[in-house]
Length: 430
Image (tube, rainbow, N blue to C red; front, side, top):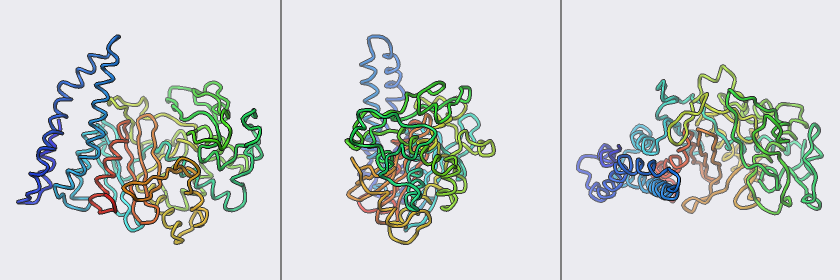
């Protein structure tokens, strides 16, 4: 059980009077946590029987609502407590969030002044071995892969190898996207595939255990065994609306491979990872044995381990990136500097601007576009089985955050860490 009052007291200077302003809030949060662990959660589990499902759902929603409230309230409480600034003084704060959200391990990278300011690591890679998370621990970045993939694909647009607006089947050689009536007047293009507006199906992927046969790209695209996902087809008029489609990124991946003659992991390594200095990151699936020992093991929301430590994702461009917080921070910094006209390691400022221009529903080419506390940010969430993560970077200023976790509970943790770090760093609006 968590003592929020104690966590706050440990960060108070002698004689700090603001504790009285937050004491009741801390007590309330602590009481809820203690009650939930002692009575609420067991009650919820007892109700998970036929005829009582709705009551169980109600209990779950109570917990979810409380956790979301804490994700916003707790960092504000710590800020009110006057915790010390800098990574050393705030380790306890993020550690408390890690415990509250039941996340075994996490890595956090903080960007300030267009530089990687510091990295914090918390918890363990594996709850059985208790191997601690280090700055070299690799996490699955899941759908964050899409932003990195889109950046590499844009480098082909930049050098004139491909066009954003040419019909995608013109680039496909070994497999064709099936034609149908939805494509009678509007066509599927790279711009639409990368912005989730192509009308393609299959939102996400389950991955594969090490004990299961793993399909190749063509089997996934066609939805044939041993693929565990349906075929990728078009069932909306291209360009008509936003609908998240990991399947669309596989079509884009195949187009890149057919045009360049290079497997996508090698392509993205040569175009993005190596030039930026993301030296530990890889798109290879399964991850090579030499890197396997550095990977975190993933955990479901109830704390059970993902069999084998993680799933294999043959859906390379959409979901297979393994990375560290510092590597991913370097990626964000490169885009921030490019937007300012101060770097063109991968893309020119004009093409970076195009990459991060809204297409529909606050989504650009591989990136979400957010307004957070009145400020413009770009980034992405990621969610593979046992892994949750978030990257976020200010569009015009030199600050941002990467949070990688080995738990299905990691999204709320990441949001809470953003609030906490934003306040302690004094980012505008926090």
